[in-house]
Length: 244
Image (cartoon, rainbow, N blue to C red; front, side, top):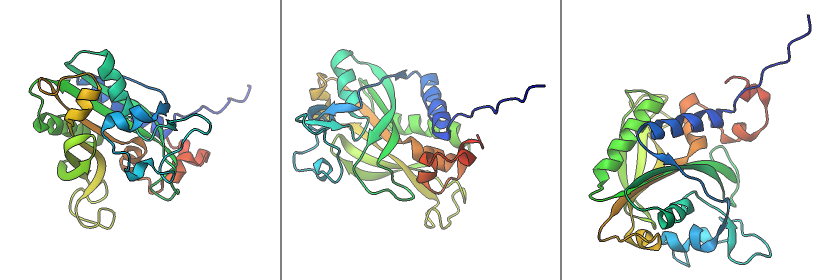
């Protein structure tokens, strides 16, 4: 009998990304994608990011040498602008993709990682719709006993903005060293789409409102399977991948 070749395994990031996207598709979202090499306008200006914002510095952004005003996208949010310019509301999209940031790597940061972005635009959209959508998503992803909480925060492209936390995977909300005793772990940023962003997308903010959210897929995978170092996901070590 000929020896059987070992079977391949899907990467944990691929697994959690596929599951996350399918959960949003079940809720009526469409999948949208955009280029990884992006214009400064779509990556910053159209998203209401000021010219003097720290994220435009070389420390945070990879600029394309020899190509003016062109970057490796720092988030998947530019797809929001591209989609709004070519579609009429109401709509709901989810945007999976790779992003790049010029920063030092450590246990929770990488220079390249994957994000999952969401955008819903329509009439009478509220923060309650955002919370209900994310509550359903995280209960499906992590279990029905998962709770979420929203904390006020600031992002240039939303107003109001919030940080989204979910129940700690280790202590289930009782408090531990992983969540620093809070019972919750931050997973993404979100908020109501800023009127300036709607305008840049060609949508009248006096008629339509929307909510948006975005977070790292790598972080979702780490929480789902208790992985404590993001660098393991990019190490190429088959002992990691072979577990899935």
